[in-house]
Image (cartoon, rainbow, N blue to C red; front, side, top):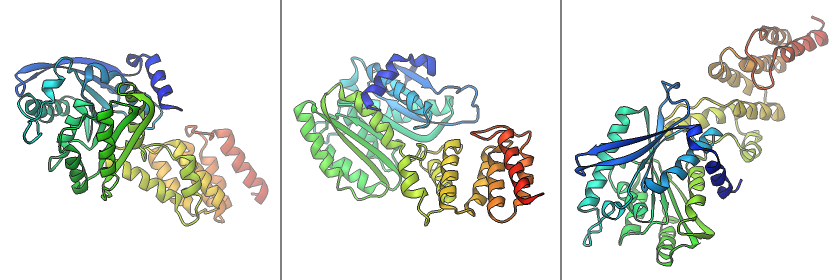
Amino acid sequence: MKPLLIVLMAFLMPISHFAQIKYESLPSQKLGETRQIKIQLPRNYEKNTEKRYPVMVVLDGDYLFEPVAGMVDYYSYWEDAPEMIVVGINQDGLRTEDTQYSETNFLPVDKGAKFFEFIGMELLAQLDQKYRTANFRIIVGHDFTANFINYYLMKSNPIFQGYINLSPDLAPEMADRISQSLNKAETGKWYYLATSSEDIPALKDEIKELDNLLKNVDNKQINYKFDNFEGASHYSLVGKAIPSAIESMFEIYRPISRKDYNEILLQTSVSPSEYLEEKYNTITELYGIQKQISVNDFMAVYNAIEKTRNWEEYKDLYKMAHEHYPGTMLGTFFEARYEEETGNPKKAMRIYQNAYGQENIAFLDADFMLEKAEAIKKDFGY
């Protein structure tokens, strides 16, 4: 689906129908004033009392919050990205002061330095105290604020792991500083950069120069994506860039694709069950969240095992299925298939029969499982 179409769909469906929107006033000692913020909590936040969520901080929240929050809700609904707590900081009339930097060393100064500390020392701390946050944070900005978010990247232990730069208006020396920071990064960082053919010419030229630098970053900890959208303006590129950024930052989070199925799972040198386990362990390591293995991903591995006839793979798969979907027929079916194909048809028949009374899942129901048991009984005369 085209990114612009996704954006339009998100706007056509009221965000409040999908997620909880809260408007809060946050007193700041650093700024000496109260700032207005918007917070979108994930669907069913109140019900999932044990679940923790990554945080996405959106600068220019007066106009950028809604498109970002809508896309996060849309992608998380389809499980292409995790549910997140999205926080927008309203900067209408304040963004120039908030993003102020020195004319000598080009680092935050005066109100800009205070705003930098407000986000890092007050906003995030209060979010962590008030909400169930995970230790994965993304920050988003547009032109002036997109330049500003990169100052967090320069810290020795950055508080943000993801950076979404929408047509940044780069300060002098910023390109080299970003490149150096990414080259030295010791933990995973996701960096997204966007411009367009109709972007402001001066910005576009500097962004392309930055892209040339970042293409040469040699660091396995860095996940970098650059977009140069054809025909989009400085403002309309935002609608295309947000879904692209989300997709690039959460590529491994998405369900197993047709491409992964054909190029990885069907290769006999690959253990499909190990691939599945490693995929979800990586999600936990990268994003700090526990994700239940989806039924669709279990089915992808099941189909791969059937295609490659690597029956031993069922042994680990049925154990994972019993763990993730206890009380359902999923683990029972995989276990029965394992016994059926490894020379224990009588045991397989009994396992199929034991599924009676368990919860239906995917294509599995009592009739299907009993038919499988009857087929074995008929074939072997039990």
